[in-house]
Image (cartoon, rainbow, N blue to C red):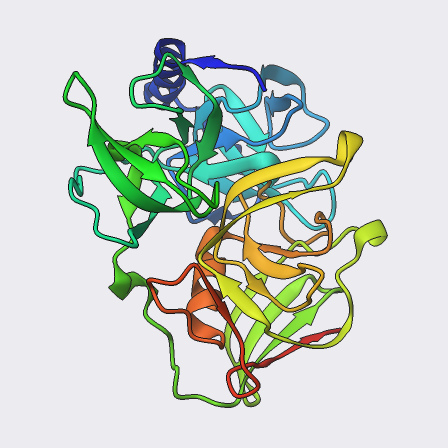
Length: 338
């Protein structure tokens, strides 16, 4: 993969974030309702460029193009003319409007906490900046990989470089052995209390996945306690319908698969809950922001926040210190895909 010079990365990212302070273009009143702001910034998540248009309409004139990993300000979110029926959401940004489908909402909130002494087996952490470059050694000149906002890893060590900057060493979520280093300020420690189980005493939990509606419901008996939009498997790699059971959970996973133009390598996939032995899981997503239509190789894509909630609620219970926990006959639960 292309090597990224750290100095260029910092200068490039800073220039993009600075766009948040440029003048806004307010939406015409003719467009539909305003939505809550998902995040102050957005990251272009596709390998192909995305158009910024003069109006929130796929036929409006293009005022600029944005390329992969550019960071843009998000001033507002609104429903307007959809480029496809399932997603009418546009983001107001510098100079115009960009469709939300391939813009990952992100924040730039470097962590002020540094855990200088990391006890075995380490702690879970999530990327808290739009893009965090990873290096083979602290202070290396070139990054070997980019880690994206909301992705999750186990921190297994901390080290200060010659300039006094602290770095975390990562393992699960990116490698099964001690792996690369990331600036400690780029990762937020996830404390155990943020991952405590939700209603663990309930024995009537089950998950309902509705492919045609692209919705997932978490149920306790007949009651829906949580619902979220999804992006399930594409027709050629469809999410398998039928009766399933939760089989295992991981706090994070590097997912690799496909071949040729279909190849993917996705580190730090957040909180997967698996329900087939072929690897189909409900998990967090950072490579698109387009829920309500099919996208995946069979898995059920949800937002990182939704994946965390489902992970905490679903059986089996996953202890904080464990990377993986398998279900037993007593600790499994139904997953119904219709």
